[in-house]
Image (cartoon, rainbow, N blue to C red; front, side, top):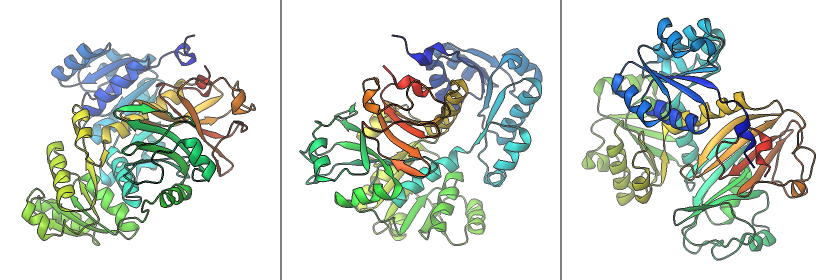
Length: 462
């Protein structure tokens, strides 16, 4: 049987900017059946991506009326502006809104605009304004609030989380099945939604037996997640201090998040002028002007005793080496920012701990919006997270109207294989669903599945 999602018309989408985010979006959008046209001033980038994907490409400035007309703005459903310039992105969207009858999304990264995003979005009539550095900083901050986690994704307006951790030697879960652990009450108020072992990802059933080294993801309300981790012997206190190498936008946003909750911040940045700016913007942080890759400087500043270490330079290779060094000389919780994903397999084998990919965070937000725009009237995609290196997805749906899946016990629904209804958020309450629970109108429902591209709640049916 063909997937229901494929019967809905693909959208006509114009992507302005053929950088890292533009390429990631092009890959995902074409795989989901959308008609994509690319615009960029660099003919080489346009040529490379049009050769790689089945898309149209136009060389020119995305804010130009004539270039947008050539790209088909009058019949487009959506324009996404992800060039390196915030101002150009906003201008592209403004022109698109005046010329075409389409939605518009802009990437805006400058901290000076961050306080004005709601105002800009409303006044310019934009569907979304995305700040990837701020989103990456928020993800890194969540990891420092719960340092034993490798990944933390929030949904249901921050009320619930998907948490990933590694099963260590002698953990109480080792060599026990999900059914066994369920009978002890250990898994009360949580749902195990995915396990990675030897590079293979599984959505486990009751007979699944855990082993040392498994990467386990579970869904729970925020406070229940911490309680579960405590019960299996994992510390849950947030870190007391952190050392950040790099003083860019993401570093600023992260430092601000951490200082607001009482975590001490020490930041090392090589550019003296930038250090002076940061000292004004972050008066409670310690700003060090120096080379963050100098091991002697790191030692002098206390890398061996710090509780967390975050490498946020603009160079991936530096971030990787800094993290490996921190793991070698300290017991710190480490977080690494990686901009490129060409060598993701190699990076995973290095055991860097928690890795944050800003461009993936950006593309997930945009893909969630695109799927919502394409969906039927009965449900809406709220959030999308790629799990286990994009081998699985967590998709949050808002149920707007009655449909085939509402009002029936889950045990009576014929669901796709490798798909789990992981959580229901109803009237402010988090429900960990059993076979007797029903999905109701007004619920937010989290689905974890290895089937990519779910755009409508009814797509969960076999």
